[in-house]
Image (cartoon, rainbow, N blue to C red; front, side, top):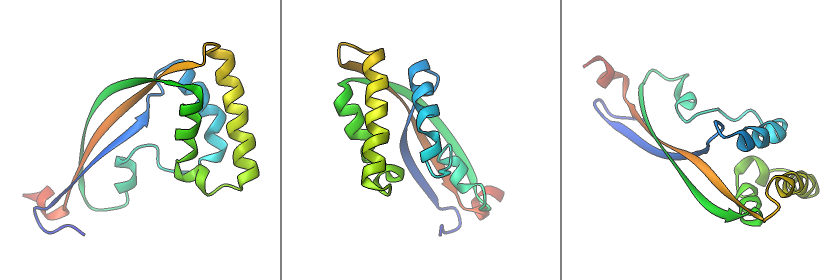
Amino acid sequence: MLRPHGALALWWNQADISIPWVAAEEDRLAPFTRDFPTTVADSFAPFPVRVATREITWSRRITIGEHIRNLATHSHFVVMDPAERAQLLGANRTALTRLFPGGELDEPYRCGLTVVRAAAAAQA
């Protein structure tokens, strides 16, 4: 709960789906993401608040294994049955290995700043 004129600021990294291989990966994994909101701002849609966002892009060069290990920490994969998770991430590793036979990739992100202000502040 926010006080009048209060604000909540959240920084959030999301995969940059404007990059074709990331969009394809998102499509492969979408059936398993358990209807999570698309953006941080979407999480606040049910509430009487004002939401402002800003975004920057960045990337890092990592191995496919590091990328898979990072994905495995995301909440919708953590709650999966371990055998199902291993099979899904293994299939994703296979698809990425075909795309990046050298074993490394540039993992692109869109880092968003979401600022949420209390409804009273939205009227001021």
